[in-house]
Amino acid sequence: MTKKLKKKEAKIVIDLLTELYPDAKAELNFSNPFELLIATILSAQCTDVQVNKTTKTLFEEFKTPKDYIKLTEEELGKRIKSCGFYNTKSRNILATCNILVEKYEGVVPNNLEELMELPGVGRKTANVVISNAFGTPAIAVDTHVFRVSNRIGLANSDNVVDTEKDLMGIIEKSLWSKAHHLLIFHGRRICKARRPLCEKCPLTEQCIYYKNGGS
Image (cartoon, helix red, strand yellow):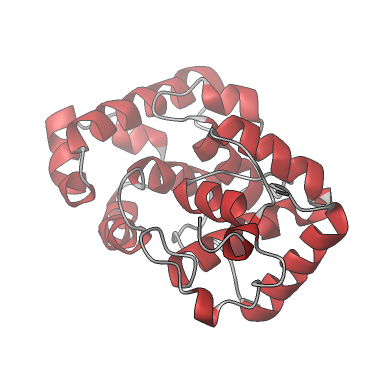
């Protein structure tokens, strides 16, 4: 049984998703790379909607890494408590801000390797930042991208790193960042975790999950 689509089939999938979600984009609110970095750290196991509620006031009060490092972990924790895991996130954000001030003069680095050295910043978060803040082609594999891409057959992997490699190999580089948003939109609206809405999906002719009877 085929477990992965061909490149021409993958192109059809991306074209169909583009038609379905013409306005697909990052749903975290930010106005600069630093804000996106903070918002993405906060988004771990938290909805974008809740993060946006939190950052609306947070970003009005704290605009640079220097602003944050004046806070204690407890003070920042109170401000981001609604995002969950606030003790860990507060600690990571303050540690990251200290590094940005001491090593990068308060500027967020624009490459994957340096971003991944920051506390609380894994490969997914780094890819989100370089893609959305700096315009570098990248595919950040979150839970939605992982689930949807492996269901459809754009990827065939049991881990996020290999899924990213599969997607980079089957999707044209110029479409990597766009595909990331398209897959997230599809995962949130139709290809849901517990019960995918296959009856509403335009990808049934391509989708391996659907062809296999939903397994």
